[in-house]
Amino acid sequence: MAGVDAESKRAAAAAGDGRAKRARADGDASVCFAPGLLESAEVRGREYAAAQPFPHHSIAPFCAEELLVGVRREIVDRLHFTQKETDIFKYHQSGDLANLDGLPDGEQSQLPCLRRLRDAIYSREFRDFVSAVTGCGPL
Image (cartoon, rainbow, N blue to C red; front, side):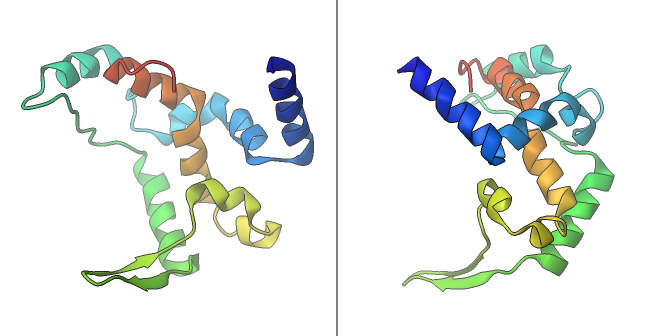
């Protein structure tokens, strides 16, 4: 079974699948976050464990300010939202961050900040940070 999984990953990488793109982004993920965030897992882990009435933690600032400004600009100016309605509320829904790689190249090129933030959140560095803070095991 492990051989099939490895083959699938190689095929996905060769086909330009998003997993390969996220793997390439892992090396520079730390520049997307607030300075020192990824190095603060030990202290944040203690705060998380001691929080009441249940373990939790708030991270502020979370992301590099200039990246967030770019993400907001792209969301407001370039994303399409579809209005949805249920019997109790209305909301506007956009596409899933995981599906950005499925967009045509022209549309992907219009969302560089959003893709950078998505890649940073999905990066091995950030997932290891969340795992260390929460003690949840590998993500």
